[in-house]
Structures are given as C-alpha cells and as structure tokens.
Length: 328
Image 1 (tube, rainbow, N blue to C red):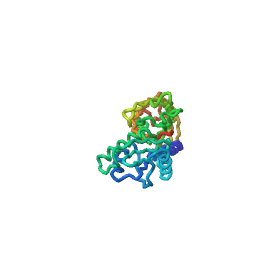
Image 2 (cartoon, rainbow, N blue to C red):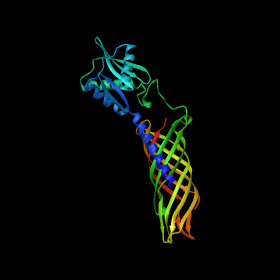
Image 3 (cartoon, rainbow, N blue to C red):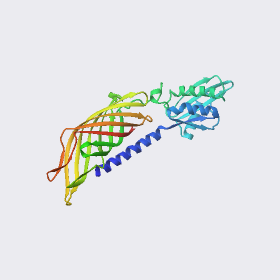
Image 4 (cartoon, rainbow, N blue to C red):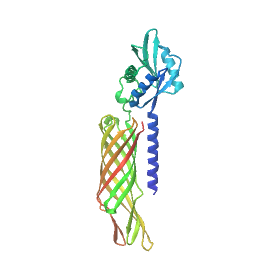
C-alpha cells in the first residue's frame, strides 16, 4: 500500500501542476477605451488564442513614441496584463496600437476610419488586431512572426510530467487491476519535439484472489524506462508510439483457511508497447488516452501448500486516461 500512496501523491502533484499551468496559460489583453461593438468582436477573434479581453477606461494614450510606450507600460502594470491595445486619433488620422509588456515593444498600423460602431467593420478591425498580435509574445508559438520573445525549444529540451489512471486486464487472475501511474519525460532539443526519453512507474490497489484454501490480494509495482515518439496530427492532436522494458515487483498477501498468513514475492520483466493519443488543451497542458500491451518473459505461478492459487497470463493489456503538464 505504500507504493499506492506514493503513486497517488504523485498523481495529485501532476494534477496540481497541470492546473497551475492551465491557469498560467490564460493571459489578458487590456482594450483601452474601446466601444462595446469593437470589444465584442475582439473577444471573439482572440478566444481561439486563449486570451481574455478586459475593458479599461483610461486617459487617452499618446499617438507617438516614446510617450505611447511609457503610458502603455503604466496601463500594463496597473492592470497586470500582458498586452495593451488602443486606437489613437490625431486630427483626421487614426492608428491601431499594440504594446507587448513582456517583450517591451510596440507594433502599430494606420487605420482608414475611426473606431467602428457596426459589427462588420468591428470584425475587420479585430482581424487586423489579430494580425498585428502575431508579432507579439501573446500569440501561440506556431502562429508568431518575428516575435521578440519566441521561446521555441528550450536549450535543454522540454520536460513533461504525466499522470494516468486506468485498468489492466489480468486474464488468469480473473479480473481487472486498477492502475495509477506517473511518468517523467524529457524531449531533448536535438530530437525536437518528436522523440523523448523518460521513466515511469505504476501501482494499484491490486486484485483479490480467492480459492478454497486461500484468500488474499495480488499486488504489482511496475517501474521502467520509456522511449516515446510524437507525431503531430494538426495543431492540437498528436499520436505517440511508446516502447520500453518494465520491472514488475509482485506479491501475493493473504491467509489460508485456517488463518495462517501467506506472503509470496516475485519479480518479472516485460517488454511494453503503447500508443498514446493526446489533445493539447493549451501550450502546457494536454489530455489523452493510452493503450498498452506488456509481454512478460517469465511464467509466474503462485502456490500455497503446493496448490496453485494464481497464474499470470504472459500478455497484459492496459487502458488509461492521461493528464500531462509541461514543466518549462
């Protein structure tokens, strides 16, 4: 049960990290002095980038540098936002401005009209804004152009942690074994995001074993290295073939019909293959499903007083739901 408690604690840690990353992923854009129609269309345009839009009433911002940058920085710090957006007016001319607080730079574009009050022109303005924002750090990495703060692949590669929960079929044990697993993965820079190495372990509450002369529970702690591939299927889906050996530390605990305690421990090695289908909720968090097959090299038979009470099948199948969080 100690192993199960450790697995549960690490599962809770992975969920907390994923929740923190998902929360951190939501960023906010301050729309200064925008009217309701423009604000509505901007919200629609930026919703696919997981950006929140906040209406901010502020003294009109400058229409030239360096005043515009200084004043926009003040808005960003006061509102605790990543981007500040506004439309300047000088005589008969207007311009759309975007201040990237994280990167510390401004992009701007002249407008042919004053801030629109109809939905059609407001939607056009929102698309213009989205195009400008592609050169800021707020845009998704895959859509950025010339960003001054494009992180790309970190120098050491990408580190991820994944927590899984599912069931494993133990044909000879006559039931399904619930499993909780935690995997730590590293995708080295020289392999891009297409292949990674890792280490994981899985445990569970076990499965009951009942015979005429014995009643107990079979437990299995699995640890081993992982070699994971990754093939993108569009911008959010990916499929990951996986292979690696595992060490199985198994035990059978229980008692005979006359109350005598029984404990038997064995170890085994398996070759595992899996397929992982993932969906990215954000840049840092993804969910998925994984199907796995494990072939055990050694035949395992548990006997009590020379009577066999449990025989393990050579092939074990596991299905699990997976929650993953990027750590850098």
